[in-house]
Image 1 (cartoon, rainbow, N blue to C red):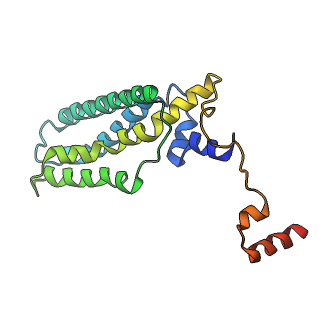
Image 2 (image 1 turned 120 degrees about the vertical axis):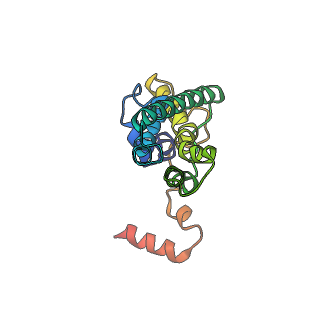
Image 3 (image 1 turned 90 degrees about the vertical axis):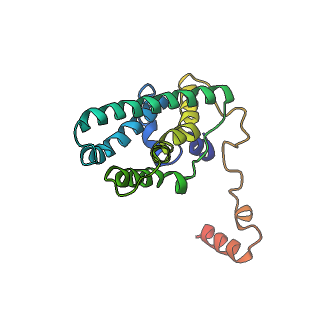
Length: 190
């Protein structure tokens, strides 16, 4: 595989970590449910020290199971959509998705300690959207490609990505810059 194909297949650091897992463990629904589990761990303190401290563990357990089930279901739906559409991975907008759970967690904490009364739909949207969105845009298509490779199918046959970089000569790299070309030629001579 060429560098573009490897980049499409492996993605960024988070996706690279998931590619080291077995395919059955890195299933998009499992990754999405894992995100729900991480969010539920972050909810321990707001539930424990919130306005409804009595029975907080039962409420937290129920909410955690609901979060993980919802994320698992969204991961499965994403995989079904990707299998039908056969689309390739897209890099999610990190500058939008990464701060969302922290903002949602902060708003939930403010709501639970009764500092502000905030709409719960907004809070849950901010908490839940990043994980399933990452799975839908990036991981489910990548997992489909990994499964195809595991089955011995080349998923890049129909793509217009060359398997090697065609512009490795000094003139193509320099693109008319005479100074750069002279430096490259001098280095090649040494």
